[in-house]
Length: 380
Image 1 (cartoon, one colour):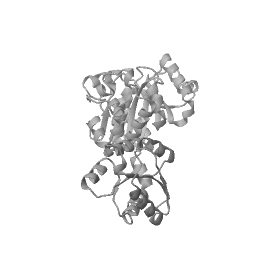
Image 2 (cartoon, one colour):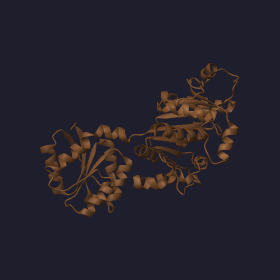
Image 3 (cartoon, one colour):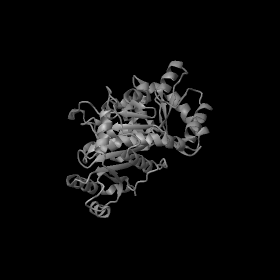
Image 4 (tube, one colour):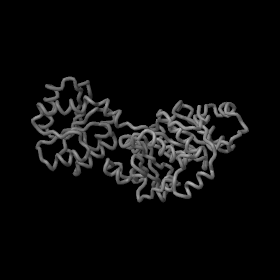
């Protein structure tokens, strides 16, 4: 077992004494710390000490200990929790495990505690990588540049190519276009996840999202939004952190311009794609955003949408103006998109633009594209 840090929150003196004695005797390579404060301060203590595992007395929690564990798991999804109790009550064991505890132990701890810690800590690296999905976001330089269309098609293509779990999330709280374009009407939205952060777990999440097809889920934006519903920075980050634990890929529609939600989500996003057209106003907005996010480095990528067959400016000159190279350029297919959306579908895979979406998805995921008879030169 590698050296790991463990935090103890045990109020019962006898239970704490036995736990500490066992750790000192049989788990000498584990660095542990005892938290003596109130339950309300436990989250801050976890944030400060960043333990690998939490040994938690189930009976020392609030009136609803299962909800308390779910709250901890929603805030720190990768934290391993070992629930402790003085008795092996089947109802208590079931409640603890259902709430997200990794293990449930009762005295004597001489054999069970070292074995449990060995089990959950020996695969710490594997668990972290297995539960950490990637998050990518699409942000329009101004309204009407097509970030939502690209996000919808990319989410579908990423699932096609990787065959992994993909979530399409609408963080453009004022438009709600993702649910409309994907034909996934729902009574719930991303705001319901925000409002239920303290009890957000896998079962609740499954109730909030809509399965567009196997492997591709959608959580739409709200049908009605007022500023009173505006989530704060921490709520947005915590929801995104939870999404990582539930899906291999999360595709975000972040709306337009450098809005509040996009800025709040920025730290949790692995790659941010800025979408613009060749319109002067759009390019101005794009340049402004690029300047504002100059410190993001390679996380920030540019996509030029609806490019004409003949451009008035060369790619090289455009890149000099923007101060960054283009990640991709996508052709204009207004009529194809109009017809597909009118029929309630995404673009047919036979269309030129759909094949470019597939190439873009391949570039993002690193999965080799499906060979096509046609070759395009839109990507660097």
